[in-house]
Length: 561
RNA sequence: GGCGACGUAGCUCAGAGGCAGAGCGGGCGCUUCAUAAGCGCUAGGUCGUUGGUUCGAAUCCAUCCGUCGCCA
Image (cartoon, rainbow, N blue to C red; front, side, top):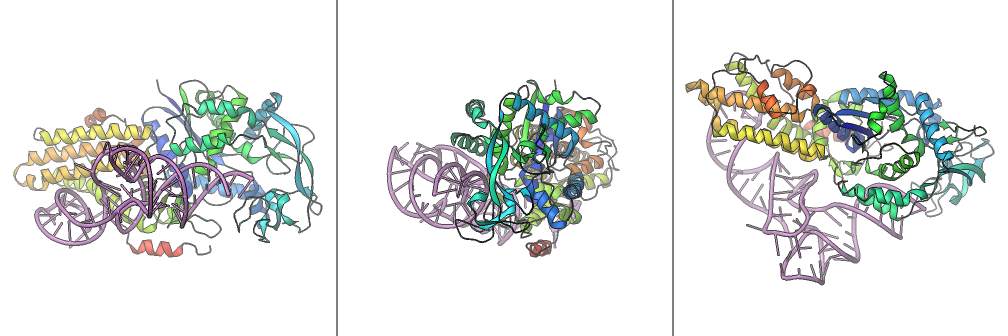
């Protein structure tokens, strides 16, 4: 029976383009995992969407003098285009600004309130008389009480890094109109997180297969004790409360956005004409939920969202939260404001998707932060992708195509130890990559696949079909035929990582159809290579990049856009 | 300030008590089917610092230095 794999991926704020840090943080890993499970014959539902609410979007909208949904639609469209070009295969990438999402959020809010897991209380908030409204934390500016920086914001001081409460600011002022806000009581709703401290500790107790960084930081967070948190704000952009008399309030984005995982599954089911189908992925032992996120998001997915699911009842808790650490860029952290970033749409305008997928796979920040540099990108492309793998494909297929009438060689000499060893190794590599992917060890998986490519290069050198063909055509037929069988397996194990070039190789090997429909099965794949079957004239899978590319790209970093 | 990580070869990173590793780059050689690609051999490191535990520490503990993140 196929397993049901639900894959939730972090929801990007729709207030700017995606950079490579986002891809390395969660999207690539999630996609590799989804593609792998689909090839294994499991049912996969991978969802995410644009986070439409939250102050970053309203701030950007204010800056541009447009409504927030203009910003949302612009970047949401760009995200969809990016996924398409980079090969990130969501089953649904929606937004949190849909009627469906609002209904699901309001249902959860209402039920948790009925169960007394959500309760009203008052809190002191900044109110601006000039704007006649309560101010989001970020909209209050003033002098930082720690470092005396005069331009500290109500949520944080950018100068000294302290996080702040607006009421701590000296000489607070409204960042919109400049008036001095007063602080007044406002009624808000709170999530009773404190009730879930022990249930969460019990739940996480047996998660010994979680990545250490995720498990440790979750336990640390829980040991610090859980406090109830406000889940509403005085805003007009966001999901309204399902209650009368709260028209000026909205459900706070951290509570509402994670519900997107559920609402997206519901939306997906409706779009597919099977309104109940989401339950297959959310209920029962045969369904497992994975949440791919960056490490900054860990507590929301290992604590808050599980607490909300526990409170609601009847839905599956996360099975695993394989959070990645961070990617740095030329040894510095990504910074949108300083334009210290490689924007994914820009990358895709200039280069192919698979080289980036390769680099971010082999250097994925799985266990610790890793670094992206353009020098490294060019080097890995030229010395590993092109030289080891692309060249292996090219040397085998081109030589075969020219010398064996464009067909899989026939009348090969009987296999000997060398062939048995290489094919055994191929079978083992398929099992190893399988195991790595099943356990979200993406870097180890692609390394293993490339080790097989190297081994195949060694095999070819030992058999030297370019020599053999002069005296013993059957000998050359044997070694090339064997190498082709290995390529047929490599295209499969690499397909989750390098889907575009695997598809191309699939075609070179004479097959039509989608490489992702190929079986992850050594014997079946070997059996599919039939002597005399037509091959197609191969072209290069990857192209070498000039090293000046690295210099030129690096020079553009940090230049104001 | 509190918490959590990270620091290993020129570069990017594995390893987590038992002889310091891989890929790439460097040097030497072989090869020529292939995108000057492939294969073999080789050099190189006091495993950030200082102490401690241990028969034995890159690994465990403490300290300091540096980097990063989260929280206040």
